[in-house]
Length: 462
Ligand code: SAM
Image (cartoon, rainbow, N blue to C red; front, side, top):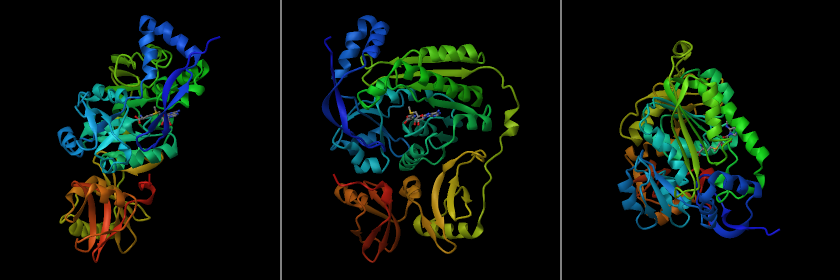
């Protein structure tokens, strides 16, 4: 039998934190059964679909509207990035070309998030929805969390949950890099959250684990894992996740269900099955993007609104987050703020017994029983005498710092690699910036800037 191979660009290396993969030409064989199913589904459009596998994966970036406007970014990025767009309704999504975009200082400064373009289109469905309480149920590495956070503009409460603890840590890094202040990162299973938050959220994102048919080019390792059995297993898991999501939506709220796969079992049939079993929900919108119909790798999305009255008086069961006060720690933090910002940083300060301090957004619910990785903005740690600021503080509030060191892009790379740099700033903690945007913290001591960029995030030599 003649075996037909489709040329797929394979990522030679990939940075899970959102770095740009380098592509090399490799031959991959798409599963025959997959091709047969797609042919049955797409009919005359099938050749165009198949031809898309001969093209390199489409790359995109989303400008972080929490830090700057797309116009500001375009002006800054003109030298190093080739941008096309915007193509999202919020005007932040662009097609992007450029060398190692994930290693660019602007990436470390949280000015953009690298995201597959069709995944970004999910945000069009949430743009005009109420977003006072939002849950991202399957959130790592953080594409949709960071997107919805820009749409929330720092208002309301965002809970980003990722069942896999290691992936939840990467999610945390991305949330911090983007300077998001109103988010708690959890690592719990959907069932635990469903019991904890009945009818609580205006919006629940369920970007469910799937058979990844739209990821074959970006992650060719998904190809040998594909089978009809795996599709069925994913569909059963998605059904459970959707069932949990349904329990957590309040009246008038919605679930945004999405996958990066094309199988009907996981997409249209999953939605139909959900609606059959949840008479209190109705379908508001449903879109399927194929690589031959939209310039991207493909995505499925459905917005499901809860129309009927809540079954219980759940509001009464939701307690607010209990803030732990520590006067001595807060005094040390105030002294730091007077020096670093030239004034106070207002908000609810929560201090753990070990001295770690957080700025908790208004409206944060009680999170007891959930596995909590990150709460609002990590401010730093108090050791009983001194307050030491956290990297997250610089990423969320660094632009307000009184003392800033401005680095060129080349110096910024040296800072990101962990090097000590000469500086003429007065002694003390300082925000370290590129083009006015904070990359992290440094401590100026007699003409030298000690590097406080976290070791775990450092830029590796190429
Ligand atoms: N929303 C993410 C983004 O935009 O960057 C991508 C999410 S990815 C498609 C699906 C996630 O669901 C994975 O991170 C995976 O670890 C998680 N997951 C796997 N099994 C799960 C389960 N049973 N319940 C909830 N989440 C699960």
